[in-house]
Image (cartoon, rainbow, N blue to C red; front, side, top):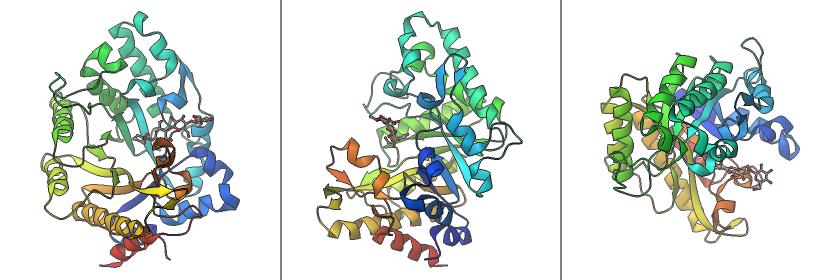
Length: 346
Ligand code: G3I
């Protein structure tokens, strides 16, 4: 195959994958990892390595070891990404769930005033975005701030988390403000899951991003994660298309940021082989949807590429998995070929 990247370029679309810096640094699996990434993708989204849990060790205390390897420690230093012609997408500056907020910060919660919380957030965002200014063209600034529960009492159904308890909904606005100050060129996204259809959660996310912009703060787009299963059907004109269209009509770009399509499994194998076929068709439907909205939809990013490193099995008690376009051994699955074929149609 010529690779998804070359085919996507022809259609003006960027292809991306999540990947761990550790896997890149070690070019794991006998050197298969990096060539696969470089051949198929324009951009890499570090799966866990640019998160606060990883980088933010304490007040004014950062762990830059891995991120500097990828991006370079100073504006003039070239990291692995530039050496290999790969773009990096930033994920994520403020993750609005308590189980992803650094422990040291949660532990001090009772003694942190709202002003202090705001200045800590400012320090962190300026440190990270500023350090890699010009090298990370787009960031997920705030991740998963909307509650799964409907009508939780807040107008945008915001989640109860450390930042919300300290600053209310303003924390979202501040995060975008600080990110824009630290890198005025960067494209700034709000990112969430289960916000792909027309429903209560996507309505809340839509209201939230409109509110941030109405406060005069730079916000450019919405990342829709697309962690789905075979239950989804995506067809022109349906609620998924309507949801993307309303974002565009209101001046927001969007991206598919974390696509994977989980299927029931036994061991490392699909329980029903027919599911691989259904999965392939659904990957293709998602690609069609992305191409329909291109260039206002800039990228299709999958949450990994080989089933070997997908987050799904461990998080589903090994009931689901095989969710990505290539199998455990880096061999393209039906999903890969379906996308390749769709990209080949000019
Ligand atoms: O690295 C440690 C390892 O040393 C330790 O032995 C092991 C024991 O639990 O944990 C390892 O860290 C895990 C890390 O993934 C790396 O594998 C963390 O516990 C685990 O919580 C972490 O999960 C990640 C999760 O986000 C939470 O940060 C997943 O890999 C990652 O795929 C997932 O990605 C999220 C997106 O950021 C946001 N959207 C949803 C998506 C899926 O949950």
